[in-house]
Image (cartoon, rainbow, N blue to C red; front, side, top):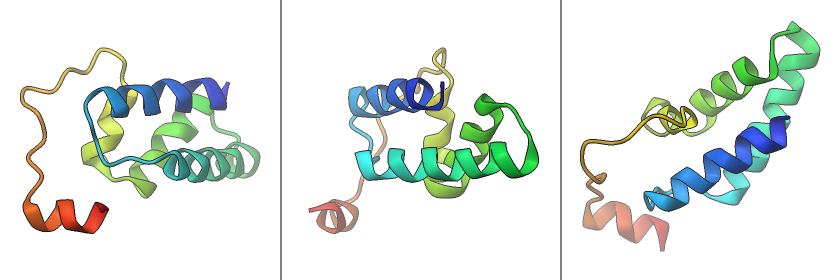
Length: 84
């Protein structure tokens, strides 16, 4: 279930050209697994919490399949250099 949720999330991030990498997805899954086992929370709740911690609130909102951004994210030249 965790893999399916994160796979869909990464697909949406790719669709909107967000700077969220496959490696972020791996970290989200690993952290969410720990949250489920230690805290006993649901997988969906664990994924949300893990994504907020790893990629931040700005990108974790894309976990919601109904979320549509108003405009494309504005990435500055300095940010673009960082991701290259």
